[in-house]
Length: 379
Image: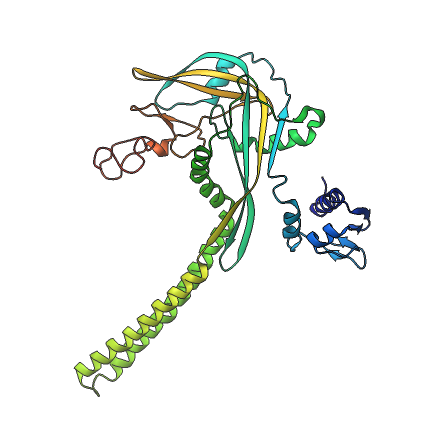
């Protein structure tokens, strides 16, 4: 696998060449260029020059890295190009010898039963949305999170993303640009529907990606808070000791008033320091979309009936030939997947056990997809 510096070097070389520059790869880890006026202006480079990538770079070269302002320069040149990528994968799904067994292991219902009606060949469109985040506190962290959804079944398939990317990278002629539509291929979701899903799932994805950073942030905050409390608690105790030592020398009322004044001043200063500490460790996160991949491919479509008491609903699930796995349905409250699902009595929503837990006040279980804001019994 190529090193990140080599990937960046090759990308810069292709981009500059595409803009009309003459480029040549040189060792170690660099390239020479002759840039036309447009490239000179957009990338802020001279007409002739060298760029260096990696630990060792050629002499008289400007270093380019992911941490430098070159990322912004390259983004200015790209503009909106590369924001949307459409591909079609021609992967022939194999026949399934035991589809009932696949469904039994792929869909587990805690309080309902399911029945397989049909398995048929079909096509679907996956949407993989990539977002870049920057987290600012006493330190800075950034990263990329991705969300993947099956536009036919609404199944979240984030776990399939590495397999999709590997298939595209190794697909060669099997991965083609896709611009058309076909029978049974779903239309893209509306902006409102897609934004609703993104707003629901993106914060949790970012929290998971930032988990080590957040853990360290909390530990540093707890450490500094404990030190701050210990210091000002010591001042309060010292003030009390001084007051007790001079109890016989001063008027009791005057002594008590002086003690209260000292403690109040210490408490005010302590609260001010706590505010400064909270401001120091306050976390701000900026998020921006960077790329969307539309991947069209064939699947095996499972048509399933879910039964709960006297009600039933039809459910579509796709078996993906790349990962050779049946997708999990969407939890209709959290918009994520689950290992076990609970079916609600009112609308037969499929939700995770946490989204059908008991009310903390009255103890009654209820569906958060039906009642997202409050318990229907005790309100």
